Length: 68
Image: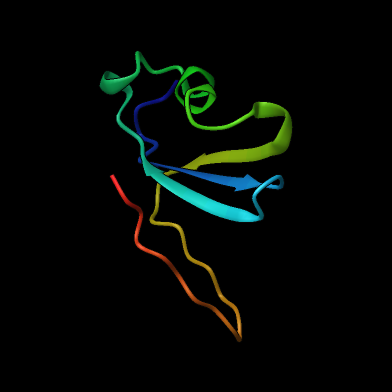
Protein backbone atom coordinates (compact mmCIF):
# COMPACT_ATOMS: atom_id res chain seq x y z
CA UNK A 1 0.00 0.00 0.00
CA UNK A 2 1.13 3.54 -0.68
CA UNK A 3 3.05 4.93 2.30
CA UNK A 4 1.66 8.44 1.78
CA UNK A 5 -1.37 7.33 3.80
CA UNK A 6 -1.07 8.20 7.49
CA UNK A 7 -4.37 7.19 9.11
CA UNK A 8 -6.94 4.39 9.14
CA UNK A 9 -10.55 5.10 10.09
CA UNK A 10 -12.83 2.18 10.90
CA UNK A 11 -16.61 2.29 11.20
CA UNK A 12 -17.58 -0.73 13.32
CA UNK A 13 -21.27 -1.51 12.87
CA UNK A 14 -21.31 -4.27 15.49
CA UNK A 15 -20.14 -2.00 18.32
CA UNK A 16 -21.52 1.25 16.88
CA UNK A 17 -18.16 2.99 17.18
CA UNK A 18 -15.64 4.74 14.98
CA UNK A 19 -11.97 3.92 15.51
CA UNK A 20 -8.90 5.75 14.19
CA UNK A 21 -5.39 4.36 13.97
CA UNK A 22 -2.10 5.85 12.89
CA UNK A 23 -0.98 4.19 9.68
CA UNK A 24 2.59 2.93 9.84
CA UNK A 25 3.16 0.23 7.25
CA UNK A 26 6.35 -0.91 8.98
CA UNK A 27 4.35 -2.01 12.03
CA UNK A 28 2.18 -4.49 10.13
CA UNK A 29 3.96 -5.19 6.84
CA UNK A 30 1.75 -2.67 5.06
CA UNK A 31 -1.28 -4.98 4.99
CA UNK A 32 -4.18 -2.99 6.42
CA UNK A 33 -6.61 -5.91 6.43
CA UNK A 34 -4.22 -8.08 8.46
CA UNK A 35 -3.79 -5.22 10.92
CA UNK A 36 -7.56 -4.74 11.23
CA UNK A 37 -8.34 -8.46 11.53
CA UNK A 38 -6.51 -8.52 14.86
CA UNK A 39 -8.84 -5.77 16.16
CA UNK A 40 -12.14 -6.11 14.28
CA UNK A 41 -14.34 -8.59 12.46
CA UNK A 42 -13.99 -7.42 8.85
CA UNK A 43 -17.56 -8.52 8.11
CA UNK A 44 -18.82 -5.88 10.58
CA UNK A 45 -16.73 -2.89 9.49
CA UNK A 46 -16.00 -0.46 6.72
CA UNK A 47 -12.61 1.22 6.72
CA UNK A 48 -10.60 3.78 4.82
CA UNK A 49 -7.00 4.92 4.75
CA UNK A 50 -6.22 8.58 4.23
CA UNK A 51 -3.47 11.20 4.22
CA UNK A 52 -4.93 13.86 6.49
CA UNK A 53 -6.10 13.66 10.09
CA UNK A 54 -9.67 12.39 10.34
CA UNK A 55 -12.34 14.96 11.15
CA UNK A 56 -15.86 14.41 12.39
CA UNK A 57 -18.48 17.13 12.31
CA UNK A 58 -21.64 16.68 14.34
CA UNK A 59 -23.92 18.69 16.59
CA UNK A 60 -23.73 16.26 19.53
CA UNK A 61 -20.55 14.31 20.20
CA UNK A 62 -18.68 12.68 23.03
CA UNK A 63 -15.50 10.69 22.96
CA UNK A 64 -13.68 8.17 25.13
CA UNK A 65 -9.97 7.73 25.64
CA UNK A 66 -8.76 4.39 24.33
CA UNK A 67 -7.29 2.17 26.98
CA UNK A 68 -4.06 0.33 26.19
